[in-house]
Length: 238
Image 1: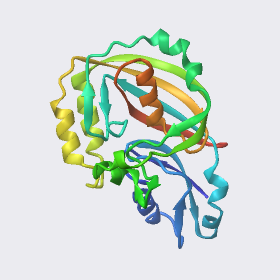
Image 2: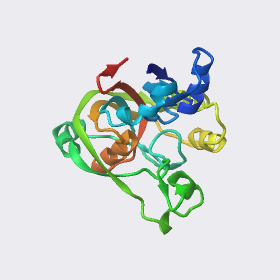
Image 3: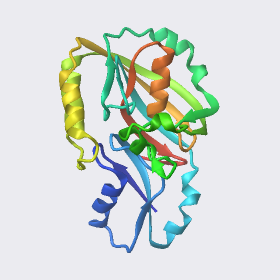
């Protein structure tokens, strides 16, 4: 078993190719994914231990993540086409006072851009083919055990825009509509943006970007995951 940090801009499979250059083994597999724009701890298994992958998949996860308010995308994170944006003033006290709403067990709908398969086709493919309206997006029972606000920041949007473009340009693959998404971000004209950092302990399979989207809807504003950092898997941490 290997504990390794996955950086922003690469997929787990691309990370495996990097690891193969550093270690001697016949086979490597991962136990749990991270989106290309997410970073942090991943568990990799080698050789015979790959047969035991199911023992690792159900472990709880801990994330530190930042929500960007004022922008919505079709992926619920920065790696998506922008669907709406506005100058946003959030009521942080309203969020703090209502964090318990987001805790506990409930059914979370898979995000439109995810690898969950419906009718023999992943949801991201349905999204690109404009066939989401012809299917029922499935839900998964998840549990948010703990959720707390760490910090909040008001930032100059131009500075933030530069950082977002830098992160998107870290992508090694060209299959994520990279040019189109960069063009989208370059056209946004906002003065300021609000970022709130939170920490959550969640059950396996929880989509943090979907949680960010849900928090934005509760606050009646646009919201996406700006940064997702996984710090812990079960009892393993960075």
